[in-house]
Amino acid sequence: MDKSLEIKLKGMLWDLPLEKRETLIKQILINPDKAFRDEQLLIRGLNSLNWYDLIQLFGYNKLLNVLSESTIEKLYPLQRQIYYKNAKRLLSKYIISPAG
Picture 1 (cartoon, helix red, strand yellow):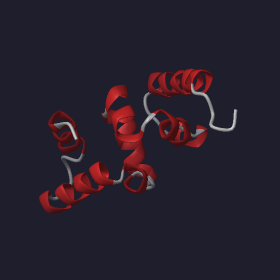
Picture 2 (cartoon, rainbow, N blue to C red):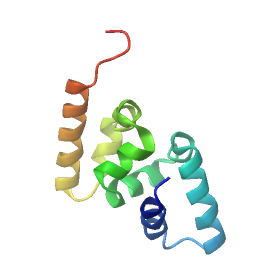
Picture 3 (cartoon, helix red, strand yellow):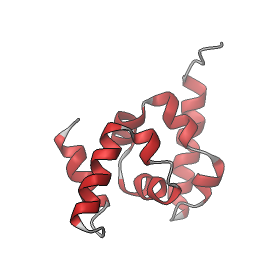
């Protein structure tokens, strides 16, 4: 993984004790799907990381699945909700499903 992404994750998790932060960063980098099942962590990631970092972690298809309406509604401020609603709309428009 990109070293700059690791630095951004450290900034995102600044308020955790060092040992817990390092463990969580490793979990995110190894298996982001599992790590971000924690909705509070996911919301923190959506608020802290940029679009390209999220795509790097999840990939397009998985990111589309992560962006549920209930998760988007918990983002703050309202502009962030609008941003991710539009992002989800664009992703769903341009990603070809495996079935289709």
